[in-house]
Length: 229
Image (cartoon, rainbow, N blue to C red; front, top):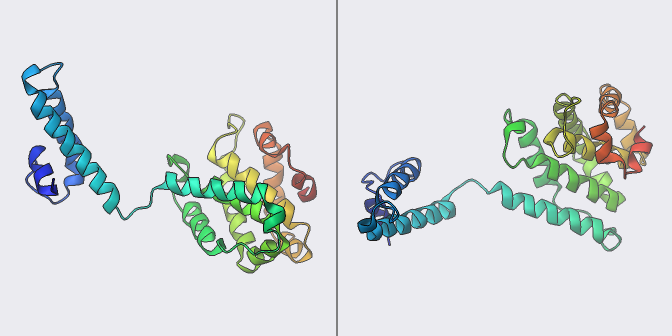
């Protein structure tokens, strides 16, 4: 089947912007020819169904936008890797900071951050924490990449949405928890402490997080919080 064939089956003649029209036409045809409603329309229904599946598959392969759910799986895998095998990875520097920092920058600057279906920021911040907790080499690398300043920006963005009704799994809560753990690890190193003490908003942000039990829920198993306080 070609794209032209599939579009014809869904009664779409114009190949321009077909992604915006294909679902609408498929639903219309499915309702019209579904065998439960139209026993004589089974063949036409199956043709439309095959065409719709083909076009959806073709579009997903050609799409320029990465799938955030796949990226989240990669980030989760990295967190698990550094958490379980930190002793093995300790002598090595994490090579993914440039891309990870770019990902965090994009999410921090996204006006729709808290409306995203699959936000990357909580998972990105968690990877940062596990890499820092794994090796001093990573702490120094993140400091050189100005990652501590970027984490503060993420903290700024997320702490503002915390309130008494916040839930443990919400983006703002998860990000605040992971960023505080990152800063907790960073306090063990003098060069990082020198940066942290020059962050005037950090102390007030930490106090705001501690106001809400939901945030403590994400931090209760971490000794890094004690270091940060």
